[in-house]
Length: 204
Image 1 (cartoon, rainbow, N blue to C red):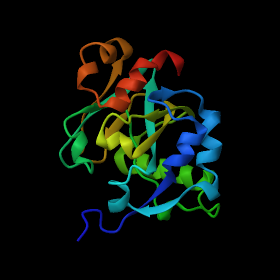
Image 2: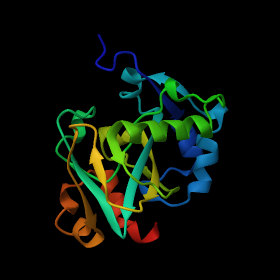
Image 3: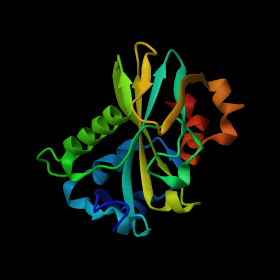
Image 4: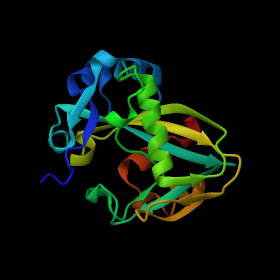
């Protein structure tokens, strides 16, 4: 039996990403990519077990950051998390895959994508406030096996207070950190996507 239990996840062909302009690291040129990535004719659901080993496709992963008064939510990935290759690494991002349960009639367009963003946040965090959110960047890291099959979409949520708690054991040591700490003592312990985000905080 597959460890993913037949999960279906949203992907785009790697060739589409290459046509739009592949990059390594982070780009803030969101309008160059988002409309094409979320165009229903350009994406589809694929069996996750296959997708995780197929660099010919990119899994679309929302990666949500949470900011309150210049401080960013940081946590450490616990062993109960779904991606074993990221265990014990620090992270700023909350997110996961877009699944068929998220379909909102588009069928695979913006509404479905945003439903997946909301679902992932609700599954992992308890928030008492959420003021605004916007897409600020995209992430790509072809230097490792995890990154080669994923494409991250960075959402920035501005919170009116710092009352946040975790719903899952996979998120430990949840606390807000300032940019100086993230760029200093915590930097080397961050997963690659979070390092890319920390490097670009001034652009968000």
